[in-house]
Image (tube, rainbow, N blue to C red):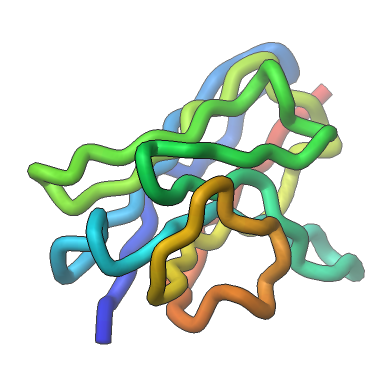
Length: 125
């Protein structure tokens, strides 16, 4: 089964940018759809962005126009470019993979069976 390791989290001021990376242990393009989720203290884990067949993407309304999900299949790496960060973006961010073929994969966590350990993002005002 695929293993996922996130990196790139940190602390940034509001309005700043961060890029998260997720290294996968195997080639994911043809067999998996991928996504980023986040969980703030006391809140449910929520879908942020997903990417599937043909690089089709889906975003949560709260991050549209600010976050971009992408992947480099040659490096087996998933990315999340986060711009114009807000304090409400503060959370633990998780990379996830689901086995199968999806166009515009859904944001529901129940579709994803493989998870990384997470990387913390803190945005100060």
